[in-house]
Amino acid sequence: EIWDGAAELKDGADKLKDGTAELSDGVSEMKDGVGEMRDETGDMDAQLEKEIEKLLEEYGGRDFDPISFVSAQNRVESVQFVLKTADIEAPETPEKKAPLEEAGSVWQRIVALARHWQQFTDAIRSWFA
Image (cartoon, helix red, strand yellow):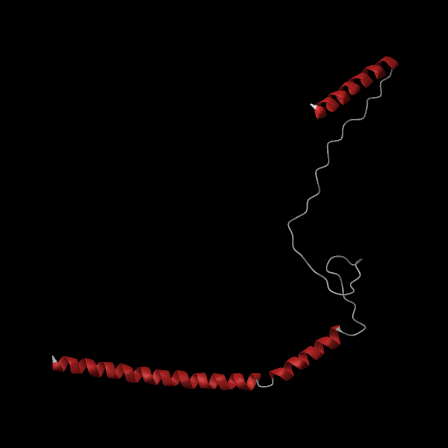
């Protein structure tokens, strides 16, 4: 049993040695990455100011004409807000009723008027029923 335990101890020590070497490589790689990040971002404040100045020159000048996102007829004087909403649909147009028929005789006109008058009074009565 002692020999088995010693063999396991040696295997564990080898794994520890390999893991420690891997950790050392990772730490070294991280050190290089941190150095690269420091080099690239060391003058970030100056880079940001330079970019802001460039944008202000491009868009802040008097010769810049802002455009409307909606219509060329809109005058843009300050801030525009763009909202996305559900589709707006036009309401259904009510069905147009046929115009009164042109009746040839006086009697036909009176009959047509009476028919339409009856429909009108029925509609009014239904409102109050």
